[in-house]
Every structure is written in structure tokens, then in C-alpha cells.
Length: 438
Image (tube, rainbow, N blue to C red):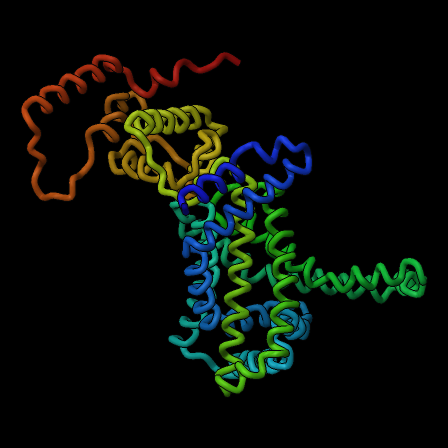
């Protein structure tokens, strides 16, 4: 019964029955496929697990993060706007949101007013950076990125997020407030026809700001190239879900008197944890949607482990070295894992095992900027060496070499000889070919 229903549902989602019904059917099919992919990934458990991890990290790092932001904003004289921002985030908690905002700001004032020792300062810096690092790791997971940024790049990106991010957000809010106070805007507000529309639009400012922040994070945080269109679609979807959840959760808090009676003093903490968890889940769902928008080919298989045939592994190893060799020969070009992933239309997690094997065999090297280079002179890299990485090298998990049957061992040697005869003594230089004429 269940397999039959599953088969019919798959036919409905991935078949062309809906698309044959014209434009409305095509739109319905597309929406259904993306909903199916996102719900499937939610129930797989990894997104929820990472959201819970981010909640724990948030509790540790919220005070250091706000303290850093406060220090940066104070240099611009706009530090007083930090409290309204925090309250806006916690507004769905109702009166408790205002209470928590006041407590957090008081803690930050205590941190600023006190003198931190060396160990305390180091802990504050670590927790603030670990927050951004956790977000990057979660986004890399969503985008199938196996290799994080180099240490130098990570520190640079983290400092930009910690130092410049709050300034940009506060500057945007200040500009909006400044525009509202101008004579022209005040005149428009008094207009009976346009005034209500402008007021309604201004009420959407928090949601538009959340959408902008989500879009920025989707483009900036993953260690891969994210195009603007997928990022903005994910940001809009995330902002819409966040806005909807805010209304629903605020209503829940108002009518959850029984919950508060049961948990007594713990009710505030529990409600806050739930709200933080929902915020992180929404952020990750938007990131997952952005990934599928940019890579629709993986919408159906989801996070299924890639299964490469031996033939695909051989071609993949050769193609990686070919692309790296071509970029190295051209002094004006560089190539990264993201570039190869986009060229071959494969997620970087699929490339990772072969890249690691090539690197271990000293056929590939990585610079501090994550650019890929040949591991040695290309004229000394034989095609047989590249193929051997995926055909010969490996391990069985046993401390002893395998004992093949004599017939299989003889056949294996014949296959190896046939491959060697095919590639001969050709090198990577021979595979790349001559330099094209200008």
C-alpha cells in the first residue's frame, strides 16, 4: 500500500502530469517540487540538528557579539540604536522580549564597564568568532562545500561580519528614519491616497531588513560562489517565513499562560530557546532553497550520498587535473574547487574525495587563497599517475593486503596493462595540448 502511494506521489511531483495542464500546472509542479525537497531535507534531521547547535552557540556568544557591535557603533555615535534592533528581533516574545532585551543590554554594559582579564577577553573573542564559524559551517553543509576557507580568509570574513555588519544595518535604519522625517515625506503621509500605502510599506521595514540580511548571508557566508538571483529568492522566502512565524509565535506567547504556569520561572528561557531555534531553522531553510534554485539538478536526490562509478572517478580525476593545468598555464587565470564544481556541474562534496586523493599523491596543491595548482612540474605528471590515484590507491580497512584469487589477480593485471597501453607515457602537458595562438 505505502510503496504504491509513494510511487504515485513521486510520479505526481516529478512526472509531467501537472506540466501538461499549461502554465498554472507548470507553476504548481515547480512549487510542489521545491516544497517536497525542503520538507524532505527538514525531516532528514540534519538541518534541525544544526539549528539546535546554533541555538547553543547563540546563548554563549550573544553578549560578546553585542559587546563588539556596541563598541563599533559607539565609534560612529549610533550605539543607542542597538537596543531597538535587539527588541525588534525579540518582539514576538511580547513583554518578555522587552525584559530580555533590557537584561542583555545590562549585561553588555557590565562587560563594558568592567575590566576583562586575559582569559576572559580571550573567551569573549572565541565565543564571538565561533558564532560566525558555526554559521559558515552550516551554510557549507547546505551548499555541499567540503572544504572551509583558509584560516586567513576566515579571520578576514569574520571580522567583516562582526565589525562592518552592525554598522551597515544601523546606517540603513538611520537613513530610513531620516527619510521619514523629511518635509516631503511628511507631506506625502498627509495625502489620503498615498499616505496609507506609505505607512503600510514602512511597517514592512523589519521584514525587508531581515530579507536583506538573509540575502547577504547566503551570498557571503558559504565558501562557494552564490549568484544573486538564488540568494535573493532564498532571502525573500526566508523573510516571508520569518514574518509569518513572528505573527504565529506572538499569538502563541499571548495565549500560552498554561505553559507559563507549568514551567514557572523557566517559561521565559524555554520560550526564548524555541524562538531562537525557529529563527535559525528559517535561515537554514532559506539557504537550502537558494541552493536548489542555483542547482535544480539536485532537487530530486537531495542529500543522498553521491555514488560515482569507477569510470566516473577516472574521468573526474583527469578532468580536474586538466582544468587545473590549463589555469596554471595561463598566468591570468586561477581555478578553485568552486570553479571546477560549476564547470563540471557537480557539487564540491562529490569532488572532495578525488581532490583529497590527488592532493595526497602530491599531484595537486592548494594556495592560501584556495587556488588549485599542479603539485609538481606538469611534464612529470603522467596520466597513468593520475589514473592510479583512483584505480590503484585505496585501503580495505584491514592491516593486511587483500588476497585475490589467482584468476582475478591475472585479469586485474591485464586490465592495468590495457590502461597503461592506452595512456602510454603521455603526461598532463600532452593532455592539455599546445598553447592556443593569439
